[in-house]
Length: 321
Ligand code: ADP
Ligand code: MG
Image (cartoon, rainbow, N blue to C red):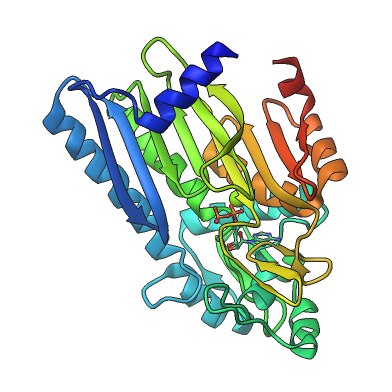
């Protein structure tokens, strides 16, 4: 416990800066980003941070669901009209998304966007019941047809729209981590919003991550030591508004077309950020029982869930750790 508290203090104070630990805070993909790495040569380190950040920004640009100049926006405009050739990267992301949908019985579904896009969580905007029901009927990942042989995509139904918000940030973080590792970086962390990837350890000790208290900003509920792995958290406290006692937030339960209401937060640990990002969103929708059951049957994957009463639930592997 003493060791965990030390980790928390180090995290909160920011590890006492030695010359070779380089840190950058920035904005990318609509969220705050933090990159920290160990490099003997500071100029090289700063350049590496620049390229990692540029990679996050590139992924954000290319896979934005609506914005001009995005591959995904282009697909959303055209794919109900017929087959569209796409890049290997976009095809790969759509395939991974499809796998998480199949794995979760549709709890993870990138076509949630027909409902999701009718909201503006910052401004407190939501659809009326009739529009919600109509949009909800368009959520079905099986309407996204993937032709692997020709690397092309078609939406089987007019009105279907895809948003990769549940997976793109994890993909971007994983790409940035790969870039750093290939450049020889042995100790680093990359965080974008709720997704963090660690490379190696913190030079002789584990990295420390606090699971945020969903209702008390800045307070940690649990502390996890981590080495060379990824953690993603999905919560109902980042983007939301409350109306008539109902909490409207950005994770949609595809079955109901409403914000998922089983948990306050879901944190998933695993070997890469793309997987943990998709699974944190998935488990957030599934809730305690189905969420734990899914994580407990996946190898090298763990989770910490906070239920609606603020109680913690751990996957089997974490209970043993
Ligand atoms: P954040 O992007 O804030 O880190 P999450 O990783 O939990 O949070 O992902 C939430 C995002 O996932 C939403 O903003 C939305 O883009 C997308 N999303 C919402 N509901 C679903 C769902 N049922 N399946 C797949 N993606 C979803
Ligand atoms: Mg996620």
